[in-house]
Image 1 (cartoon, rainbow, N blue to C red):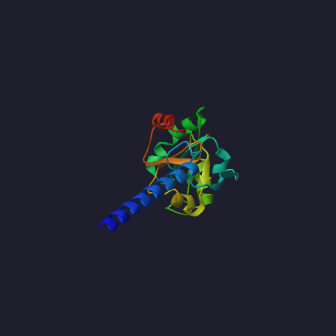
Image 2: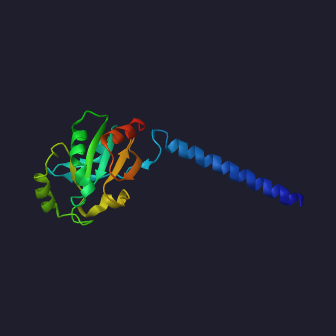
Image 3: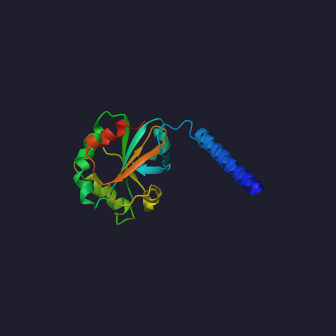
Length: 176
C-alpha cells in the first residue's frame, strides 16, 4: 500500500512539473505577442487596381478587415459608413475582402464592373479572394463579418453582423 502511495505521489509530481514546463514554453513562444489570440492567417490578395496586398505589409499596424458580398443587403447598407471610416485618420488600416466566384459572389470581372459604379466607395480598398480561400481560413460563417487584427498580427476577434464606425473604433481601443 505504501509503495502505491509513493507511486501515485511521484506521478502527480511528474504531471505537475510537465505542466509547468509546457507553460514556460508557451510563454517563451508568445513573448512578443501583445494581444490574446492566434496569429491571423496571412494573405496575399490582389486589389481592384491590380496591386498585390499582403497582410505582412501592415506589420506593426492594427488592421480592420470586413468580409462582404455584393448581394448582401446589410453589407451594402453599411458601405457609405465604411467609406467614411476608411477616409478617417485612425490608428488602424481598413480593408475589405470579397470572394469572386464563391459564396454566390459575381465573377471577378462582373464584380469589378459593378463596384466601379458603386456610389460613395472611393476610399474603400477591396481585396479579391478568388475562390474564397481566406473566407475559409478566417472561418467566416456569414456576411458581413468584421475581423480585428492587432499590431502584433494576432487575430483578436471576428464578429458577424454590421457594426457602426463608433463600435469599430471602440473595439480597437482595447487592442494593441
